Amino acid sequence: MALDLHPARDGAPPTAKPPSPKGRGARRRLARLDLKAAPYLFISPFYLVFLIFGGFPLVYTLWVSLHTWGLSSGERTFTGWDNYSYLLGDGEFWHAVVNTIGIFAVSTVPQLLLALMVAGALDRKMRGATLMRIGMVAPLITSTAAVAIVFTQLFDKDFGFVNWAIGGLGFDHIAWQESRGWSWVAISTMVDWRWTGYNALIYLAAMQAIPRDLYEAAAIDGASRLRQFWQITVPLLRPTIIFTIIVSTIGGLQLFTEPVLFGSGSANRMDGGALHQFQTITMYMYDNAFTDDRYGYGAAVAWALFLLIIVFSLVNFAFVRRTGGTK
View (cartoon, rainbow, N blue to C red):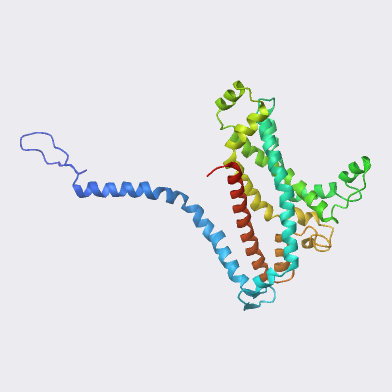
């Protein structure tokens, strides 16, 4: 505010001039602008980074998928939707889709159920609870390559520990890499070992936010611990369960490192076995783009995977909401 520094004629102290109506209106507009624009300014760095490293590559990949594009040959020929037309009739692509969905189903469902049970156990009062919670994160610290190498040795057909244990029980050894179904189980075991603890800690954090008064009231009414878990804990965890399902869907359909290292004994790791029995979509995409120098077709496979992830995420979201009775 402006001050009138000229002394008054009657000797009274100087007085402050009231702000003009124009000045008050400008400050109100700035305050409203700050209130409305501040949240967008705070989140803008994420979207700027996403546009540079996510949005632009996505659009550029779509452009590449409309070409016969070779990295080493330098060929750049516009072919329109030919790559997508070929993809729809490509048996090897759909074979990889079945493998990916199969491994995703075998790994994700047991993983989330086990994580939910582990979180329920850790939510109780027990000795060494903090140490056990820290231990659940230990698999995330371990390198994915190291995990895959260890599990590949465990599931070795001739000298693996798993087959040794199965043989001790009187069963025949299992050719884990040669069988389509058993290779899915082996790869899913790697995925579950690595990510079950992560999801368990997410569930545990959500469980600890549930008011304890609900459990006390249920206990007074005679509800058992199991009934409290299914009638109180699980319904209140529904938003968290939806989050973990969507995140697991995105990660499961993009599975790459575990099956690649699981097939390290084959001539081409991207084949997913001699009969492509555990070749995922990402492996098929990499094989076409970088091994066969069909970068345009590989980009089309990448976009097909992107659309598949969106569809599966929406289906899972709708299914969980419908079964939970939410609106």
